[in-house]
Image (tube, rainbow, N blue to C red):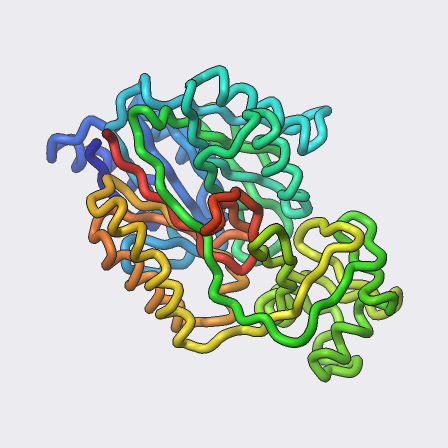
Length: 377
């Protein structure tokens, strides 16, 4: 499978790059596009539909092309993958719950291929993405290679969109089912965040609103832990102050996943998290690590380089909160990841990530870097 990656600043440049790819011998069948909300999605759809190229994409909170971190652009990965190796499906949630829609997609993946893998993009700002992961896994009936991310909207936090050739939706999912008997999928999600302090317990929660920690008001525990003491500077703050610096490390069976606080309610003393947690779950707070952890994160992906030294393409889902925490330093991580393979790579800064933990269990993550390698067998 051949691939080409490129970035554009307007939708007309998509056509120019498609033409150039064809002149260089690539006959693209599939395009993966991550685009700033500055772009007209309908114009992107028109270009790829007219070129008879299947389209799978979403809006972003920043874009990644090879070694570069971009803004207000669109990045594209053109693939000449045979049609029998993949199936593209995009859908609104409609009258279904998030879990039900995801469950049906998992069942469709199982029907499509005996050994499916999934790349998934989610639209919507207030989606419980845990329900997406659980629904897909229950629909398939087992663990499979499963990666993706929640679309962004340049931190406006108003509307995020996923799209295919025929559908644009802020209330649905776009799925790319892959036949892993034809396309090898390898990947991993890791964060490098440092846990601090002792273990805490979720003692009262409604959905993704955390009311109680250790039988105390959740916000009080948070503020005392980090020494803010109702500092008015963080009142009403969202991703830039809370989730970018102090995610919760939820303890699961032999591994942890991060959950980001996205809103502090000073009147009700609650923390709203990026997605739901459960009563009785244990967690530790964490704090933004230093530059050395970026190097550690790059090193953690080196075993993938040994397993798949020559992938045809690399896709990266990296949390926008992570970008906010590290700033320009995150470019060192992007550069290091690209240098593992030196092959076409695109990605975007997301509002949440899906990917397999080092133990092989697929989870929804925050503040995490989820990377996937594609290689035609």
